[in-house]
Image (tube, rainbow, N blue to C red; front, top):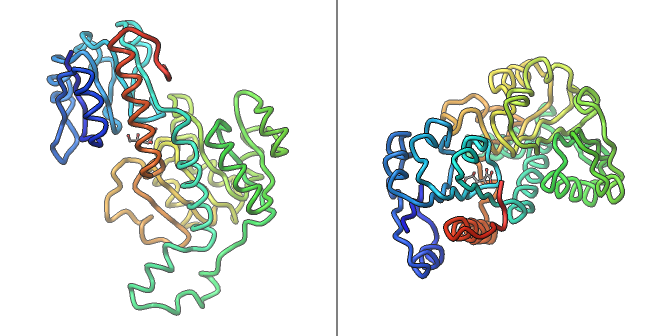
Length: 318
Ligand code: 8YV
Protein backbone atom coordinates (compact mmCIF):
# COMPACT_ATOMS: atom_id res chain seq x y z
CA UNK A 1 0.00 0.00 0.00
CA UNK A 2 1.12 3.56 -0.72
CA UNK A 3 1.56 6.25 1.94
CA UNK A 4 2.27 9.96 1.45
CA UNK A 5 3.90 12.04 4.22
CA UNK A 6 3.78 15.85 4.09
CA UNK A 7 7.21 16.43 5.65
CA UNK A 8 10.29 14.39 6.63
CA UNK A 9 9.86 12.29 9.79
CA UNK A 10 12.35 10.78 12.27
CA UNK A 11 14.28 7.71 11.05
CA UNK A 12 12.60 5.31 13.48
CA UNK A 13 9.28 6.31 11.91
CA UNK A 14 10.47 5.51 8.39
CA UNK A 15 11.82 2.17 9.63
CA UNK A 16 8.45 1.29 11.17
CA UNK A 17 6.66 2.12 7.89
CA UNK A 18 9.15 0.21 5.73
CA UNK A 19 9.01 -2.76 8.15
CA UNK A 20 5.22 -2.71 7.58
CA UNK A 21 5.96 -3.15 3.87
CA UNK A 22 4.54 0.24 2.89
CA UNK A 23 5.59 2.20 -0.21
CA UNK A 24 6.33 5.61 1.34
CA UNK A 25 6.66 8.97 -0.45
CA UNK A 26 7.81 12.00 1.59
CA UNK A 27 7.54 15.67 0.67
CA UNK A 28 11.14 16.81 1.09
CA UNK A 29 10.88 20.36 -0.24
CA UNK A 30 11.50 23.11 2.31
CA UNK A 31 8.17 24.77 1.59
CA UNK A 32 4.50 23.98 2.16
CA UNK A 33 2.73 21.91 -0.49
CA UNK A 34 0.28 23.71 -2.72
CA UNK A 35 -3.27 22.32 -2.57
CA UNK A 36 -2.76 20.98 -6.12
CA UNK A 37 0.47 19.18 -5.18
CA UNK A 38 -1.20 17.71 -2.09
CA UNK A 39 -4.04 16.33 -4.22
CA UNK A 40 -1.74 14.93 -6.90
CA UNK A 41 0.33 13.05 -4.29
CA UNK A 42 -2.68 11.82 -2.31
CA UNK A 43 -4.61 10.58 -5.35
CA UNK A 44 -1.97 7.85 -5.64
CA UNK A 45 -2.02 6.97 -1.93
CA UNK A 46 -3.96 4.70 0.44
CA UNK A 47 -2.84 6.64 3.49
CA UNK A 48 -1.80 10.21 4.34
CA UNK A 49 0.38 11.14 7.34
CA UNK A 50 -0.20 14.86 7.67
CA UNK A 51 2.18 17.08 9.63
CA UNK A 52 1.49 20.80 9.70
CA UNK A 53 -1.79 22.49 8.93
CA UNK A 54 -2.50 21.63 5.26
CA UNK A 55 -6.17 22.34 4.53
CA UNK A 56 -7.80 18.89 4.17
CA UNK A 57 -11.11 20.43 3.15
CA UNK A 58 -14.10 19.12 1.14
CA UNK A 59 -12.42 19.98 -2.18
CA UNK A 60 -9.32 17.97 -1.20
CA UNK A 61 -11.34 15.02 0.13
CA UNK A 62 -13.61 15.03 -2.93
CA UNK A 63 -10.50 14.62 -5.11
CA UNK A 64 -8.87 12.01 -2.86
CA UNK A 65 -11.71 9.63 -2.03
CA UNK A 66 -9.24 6.74 -2.58
CA UNK A 67 -7.68 7.45 0.78
CA UNK A 68 -8.45 4.88 3.48
CA UNK A 69 -6.92 6.90 6.29
CA UNK A 70 -5.63 10.36 7.23
CA UNK A 71 -3.32 10.26 10.23
CA UNK A 72 -2.74 13.69 11.74
CA UNK A 73 0.61 14.47 13.39
CA UNK A 74 -1.34 16.84 15.63
CA UNK A 75 -4.11 16.85 18.24
CA UNK A 76 -5.81 19.75 16.46
CA UNK A 77 -8.06 18.83 13.50
CA UNK A 78 -9.57 22.24 12.70
CA UNK A 79 -7.87 22.01 9.27
CA UNK A 80 -9.82 18.85 8.36
CA UNK A 81 -13.44 18.61 7.13
CA UNK A 82 -14.27 15.67 9.39
CA UNK A 83 -17.89 15.29 8.21
CA UNK A 84 -16.84 14.99 4.56
CA UNK A 85 -14.06 12.52 5.45
CA UNK A 86 -16.64 10.37 7.26
CA UNK A 87 -18.96 10.64 4.24
CA UNK A 88 -16.22 9.13 2.05
CA UNK A 89 -15.36 6.50 4.68
CA UNK A 90 -11.91 8.03 5.25
CA UNK A 91 -10.78 7.40 8.85
CA UNK A 92 -9.04 10.32 10.61
CA UNK A 93 -6.65 9.84 13.53
CA UNK A 94 -4.94 12.44 15.77
CA UNK A 95 -2.44 12.60 18.65
CA UNK A 96 -4.21 13.62 21.89
CA UNK A 97 -2.62 13.13 25.31
CA UNK A 98 0.98 12.61 24.26
CA UNK A 99 1.53 16.38 23.82
CA UNK A 100 -0.45 17.59 26.83
CA UNK A 101 2.49 18.33 29.13
CA UNK A 102 4.73 19.86 26.47
CA UNK A 103 1.99 22.22 25.33
CA UNK A 104 0.97 23.13 28.90
CA UNK A 105 4.63 23.85 29.70
CA UNK A 106 4.78 26.16 26.68
CA UNK A 107 1.77 28.11 27.97
CA UNK A 108 3.35 28.15 31.45
CA UNK A 109 6.60 29.46 29.93
CA UNK A 110 4.76 32.20 28.03
CA UNK A 111 2.73 33.43 31.00
CA UNK A 112 5.90 33.76 33.11
CA UNK A 113 7.92 35.33 30.27
CA UNK A 114 5.23 37.92 29.58
CA UNK A 115 4.74 38.66 33.29
CA UNK A 116 8.46 39.48 33.55
CA UNK A 117 8.71 41.16 30.16
CA UNK A 118 11.50 38.66 29.47
CA UNK A 119 11.72 38.54 25.67
CA UNK A 120 11.66 42.36 25.28
CA UNK A 121 14.28 43.00 27.97
CA UNK A 122 16.47 40.20 26.62
CA UNK A 123 16.31 41.80 23.16
CA UNK A 124 17.24 45.15 24.74
CA UNK A 125 20.62 43.68 25.75
CA UNK A 126 21.48 42.85 22.12
CA UNK A 127 20.28 46.39 21.29
CA UNK A 128 22.94 47.69 23.72
CA UNK A 129 20.31 48.84 26.21
CA UNK A 130 21.07 46.82 29.39
CA UNK A 131 19.55 49.56 31.55
CA UNK A 132 16.12 49.25 29.91
CA UNK A 133 15.11 47.07 32.84
CA UNK A 134 15.64 49.92 35.27
CA UNK A 135 12.76 51.86 33.74
CA UNK A 136 9.69 51.27 35.96
CA UNK A 137 7.52 50.97 32.83
CA UNK A 138 9.47 47.79 32.04
CA UNK A 139 9.00 46.23 35.46
CA UNK A 140 7.14 42.93 35.56
CA UNK A 141 4.11 41.76 37.52
CA UNK A 142 3.80 38.75 39.85
CA UNK A 143 1.52 35.80 39.24
CA UNK A 144 1.30 34.66 42.88
CA UNK A 145 -2.31 34.42 44.03
CA UNK A 146 -3.65 35.86 40.78
CA UNK A 147 -6.57 34.40 38.76
CA UNK A 148 -5.84 32.10 35.81
CA UNK A 149 -8.78 31.85 33.40
CA UNK A 150 -8.87 28.85 31.07
CA UNK A 151 -10.91 28.96 27.84
CA UNK A 152 -11.47 25.26 27.14
CA UNK A 153 -10.46 23.22 30.22
CA UNK A 154 -9.49 19.88 28.65
CA UNK A 155 -6.28 17.92 29.31
CA UNK A 156 -3.87 20.71 28.27
CA UNK A 157 -5.84 23.39 30.17
CA UNK A 158 -5.89 21.13 33.23
CA UNK A 159 -2.13 20.51 32.99
CA UNK A 160 -1.49 24.27 32.90
CA UNK A 161 -3.89 24.98 35.76
CA UNK A 162 -2.21 22.30 37.88
CA UNK A 163 1.21 23.90 37.34
CA UNK A 164 -0.11 27.41 38.01
CA UNK A 165 -1.80 26.26 41.21
CA UNK A 166 1.30 24.43 42.47
CA UNK A 167 3.83 27.12 41.50
CA UNK A 168 1.89 30.34 42.13
CA UNK A 169 -1.19 29.28 44.12
CA UNK A 170 -3.29 30.83 41.36
CA UNK A 171 -7.09 30.75 41.56
CA UNK A 172 -8.50 28.80 38.61
CA UNK A 173 -11.65 29.80 36.71
CA UNK A 174 -12.72 28.25 33.44
CA UNK A 175 -15.23 28.53 30.62
CA UNK A 176 -16.29 25.28 29.01
CA UNK A 177 -19.34 23.64 27.50
CA UNK A 178 -19.18 20.93 30.17
CA UNK A 179 -18.17 20.94 33.84
CA UNK A 180 -14.67 19.58 34.58
CA UNK A 181 -15.30 17.69 37.85
CA UNK A 182 -11.66 16.68 38.27
CA UNK A 183 -10.47 20.29 38.01
CA UNK A 184 -13.17 21.45 40.41
CA UNK A 185 -12.20 18.71 42.89
CA UNK A 186 -8.39 18.74 42.58
CA UNK A 187 -7.75 22.40 41.70
CA UNK A 188 -10.81 24.05 43.26
CA UNK A 189 -11.52 25.38 39.77
CA UNK A 190 -14.73 27.39 39.25
CA UNK A 191 -16.81 27.25 36.05
CA UNK A 192 -17.82 30.74 34.89
CA UNK A 193 -19.58 32.50 32.03
CA UNK A 194 -17.51 33.79 29.12
CA UNK A 195 -18.08 37.36 30.33
CA UNK A 196 -16.79 36.50 33.82
CA UNK A 197 -13.77 34.69 32.36
CA UNK A 198 -12.93 37.79 30.32
CA UNK A 199 -13.45 40.34 33.11
CA UNK A 200 -12.04 38.32 36.06
CA UNK A 201 -8.90 36.72 34.60
CA UNK A 202 -5.45 38.13 35.38
CA UNK A 203 -4.09 35.58 32.88
CA UNK A 204 -6.49 34.25 30.21
CA UNK A 205 -5.18 31.18 28.39
CA UNK A 206 -6.82 29.51 25.37
CA UNK A 207 -6.96 25.70 25.20
CA UNK A 208 -10.07 24.87 23.19
CA UNK A 209 -10.54 23.29 19.73
CA UNK A 210 -10.96 25.91 17.03
CA UNK A 211 -14.42 25.83 15.42
CA UNK A 212 -16.39 28.10 13.08
CA UNK A 213 -18.32 29.33 16.17
CA UNK A 214 -15.29 30.38 18.26
CA UNK A 215 -13.04 31.65 15.44
CA UNK A 216 -11.96 35.25 16.18
CA UNK A 217 -13.76 35.22 19.53
CA UNK A 218 -10.88 37.15 21.13
CA UNK A 219 -11.36 40.46 19.34
CA UNK A 220 -11.23 44.19 20.16
CA UNK A 221 -14.52 44.12 22.07
CA UNK A 222 -13.33 41.27 24.28
CA UNK A 223 -9.85 42.70 24.83
CA UNK A 224 -11.64 45.94 25.83
CA UNK A 225 -13.53 44.08 28.59
CA UNK A 226 -10.39 42.45 30.01
CA UNK A 227 -8.50 43.97 32.98
CA UNK A 228 -5.84 46.54 31.93
CA UNK A 229 -3.45 44.39 34.00
CA UNK A 230 -4.44 41.15 32.20
CA UNK A 231 -2.23 38.83 30.13
CA UNK A 232 -3.60 36.97 27.07
CA UNK A 233 -2.01 33.59 26.23
CA UNK A 234 -2.74 31.50 23.10
CA UNK A 235 -1.05 28.12 22.50
CA UNK A 236 -4.09 26.59 20.76
CA UNK A 237 -4.78 28.16 17.33
CA UNK A 238 -4.11 31.65 15.97
CA UNK A 239 -7.65 31.69 14.60
CA UNK A 240 -8.99 32.33 18.12
CA UNK A 241 -7.61 35.86 18.22
CA UNK A 242 -7.95 38.85 15.90
CA UNK A 243 -4.33 39.95 15.62
CA UNK A 244 -4.80 43.61 14.54
CA UNK A 245 -7.25 43.98 17.47
CA UNK A 246 -4.69 42.41 19.81
CA UNK A 247 -1.98 44.84 18.64
CA UNK A 248 -4.36 47.77 19.18
CA UNK A 249 -5.42 46.52 22.62
CA UNK A 250 -1.74 46.32 23.66
CA UNK A 251 -0.97 49.73 22.14
CA UNK A 252 -3.97 51.29 23.93
CA UNK A 253 -3.04 49.52 27.20
CA UNK A 254 -6.45 47.79 27.29
CA UNK A 255 -4.52 44.67 28.31
CA UNK A 256 -1.08 44.42 29.92
CA UNK A 257 0.63 41.73 27.82
CA UNK A 258 0.33 38.77 25.46
CA UNK A 259 2.09 35.48 24.80
CA UNK A 260 1.50 33.58 21.55
CA UNK A 261 2.76 30.21 20.35
CA UNK A 262 0.25 30.34 17.50
CA UNK A 263 -0.30 33.34 15.27
CA UNK A 264 -2.83 34.57 12.75
CA UNK A 265 -1.71 33.98 10.07
CA UNK A 266 1.17 31.49 10.38
CA UNK A 267 3.97 31.95 9.75
CA UNK A 268 4.14 35.42 11.33
CA UNK A 269 5.88 38.01 9.15
CA UNK A 270 9.26 39.25 10.53
CA UNK A 271 8.03 42.87 10.51
CA UNK A 272 4.99 42.12 12.71
CA UNK A 273 4.89 44.86 15.42
CA UNK A 274 4.14 42.26 18.11
CA UNK A 275 7.75 41.06 17.81
CA UNK A 276 9.11 44.39 19.08
CA UNK A 277 6.51 45.19 21.75
CA UNK A 278 7.29 45.16 25.50
CA UNK A 279 5.35 42.56 27.51
CA UNK A 280 4.80 40.43 24.37
CA UNK A 281 6.38 36.99 23.81
CA UNK A 282 5.97 35.15 20.51
CA UNK A 283 7.06 31.58 19.78
CA UNK A 284 6.89 29.78 16.40
CA UNK A 285 4.29 27.08 17.18
CA UNK A 286 6.60 24.92 19.27
CA UNK A 287 4.00 23.78 21.82
CA UNK A 288 4.68 20.11 21.22
CA UNK A 289 8.24 20.49 19.97
CA UNK A 290 10.19 18.45 22.47
CA UNK A 291 12.14 15.30 21.52
CA UNK A 292 10.08 13.15 23.87
CA UNK A 293 6.74 14.49 22.68
CA UNK A 294 7.49 14.41 18.97
CA UNK A 295 8.66 10.77 19.26
CA UNK A 296 5.41 9.92 21.07
CA UNK A 297 3.35 11.89 18.52
CA UNK A 298 4.98 10.11 15.58
CA UNK A 299 4.53 6.69 17.15
CA UNK A 300 0.85 7.36 17.81
CA UNK A 301 0.37 8.81 14.31
CA UNK A 302 1.97 5.69 12.79
CA UNK A 303 -0.15 3.41 15.00
CA UNK A 304 -3.26 5.23 13.75
CA UNK A 305 -2.07 5.07 10.14
CA UNK A 306 -1.36 1.32 10.25
CA UNK A 307 -4.71 0.64 11.95
CA UNK A 308 -6.52 2.72 9.32
CA UNK A 309 -4.78 0.87 6.48
CA UNK A 310 -5.48 -2.54 8.05
CA UNK A 311 -9.08 -1.69 8.91
CA UNK A 312 -8.52 -2.20 12.64
CA UNK A 313 -9.52 0.29 15.39
CA UNK A 314 -7.27 3.29 15.91
CA UNK A 315 -5.77 4.33 19.24
CA UNK A 316 -7.07 7.88 18.64
CA UNK A 317 -9.78 8.42 16.01
CA UNK A 318 -11.42 11.83 15.56
C1 8YV B 1 1.66 20.32 15.87
C2 8YV B 1 -0.30 21.22 17.07
O1 8YV B 1 2.99 20.36 16.05
O2 8YV B 1 -0.93 19.12 17.78
C3 8YV B 1 -1.32 20.19 17.35
O3 8YV B 1 -2.53 20.47 17.17
O4 8YV B 1 -0.62 22.32 16.77
C4 8YV B 1 1.11 20.88 17.13
O5 8YV B 1 1.35 19.92 18.10
C5 8YV B 1 1.40 21.11 14.66
O6 8YV B 1 0.09 20.91 14.29
C6 8YV B 1 2.31 20.67 13.54
O7 8YV B 1 2.10 19.35 13.13
